[in-house]
Amino acid sequence: MTAVIQAVLNGTMMGSMYGLTALGLTLIFGVMKVVNFAHGSLLMVGMFAAYWLIKLTGMHPYFALFIVPPFLFFFGYFMQDLVIKPVFKAEQQVREPLTVIIVTTGVWYVLDNLALMLFGAEYRTVRTAISGTSFMLGEVIVSIPKFSGFVVAVATAVGLALFMKKTRTGKALQATSLDREAANLMGIDQYRIYNLAFGIGTAIAGIAGCVIIPFYYVYPSVGVVFDIRAFIIVVLGGLGSIKGAMLGGIIVGLIESVFSQYITSTWTEAIIYAIFLVILFVKPSGFFGHKQDW
Image 1 (cartoon, rainbow, N blue to C red):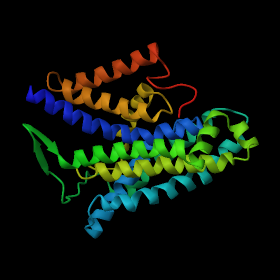
Image 2 (image 1 turned 60 degrees about the vertical axis):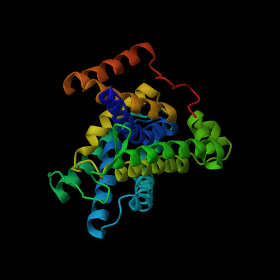
Image 3 (image 1 turned 45 degrees about the vertical axis):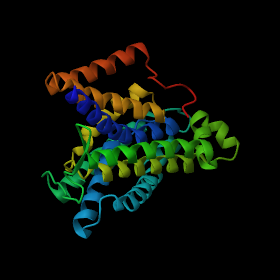
């Protein structure tokens, strides 16, 4: 029984971080109605930024949360402004321009190969003050880095939900996501909102990079691992849904952790993809996906 409780706890903590990586993806889709295929690569940029910051300064990994996410925000903001916005303007009559997907796919390849050229293909780890530490909760072992990541993931999801509901900028993001033409008529600058959405989504990838780095390898293609799960999670939870992203992440984390106690990891992957396909057939909008996402 203790083994099952341990597996549930580990799955919940790891799943919350999968949910955190999916939050930025679902925000960008919810507002811009495009799938950002470069999201995993932006997570990789966040992980490398945190890695070098900790490696060169000896900084505590969670102090990096005050530096890396703001850097990633401006990185995403100006990438959207300089690379993606011209495509939107060229296809402004199209609700969900497929060309943007091709552009984000190109950004994915450019970022991954740029990291490969600059840092090489080797797997890197950074030893921090909390790496490998844990505490006992009854008979269950709780990893401090993963528990800290769980707390940061929940705080980020709650903060994002409050930002969307309580602030003027959040309401402008919601209005643009519902009807960008009507939002334009109300004086909302659609392209500035897109820049903000992409910047916030990228900053959330930076938060995920900071909390994952104490217990996970960083290498140029690490984003692919989280990207695939993020897409599954967003479909499970519902495109554009914050609570759906967190719930979907925890479901995937629990399947990985609990089922791996009894079957091989290959079969757990198969179960995750099977559930993904079932949800696509039965409820294509996901658990919480609907027209008014926020």
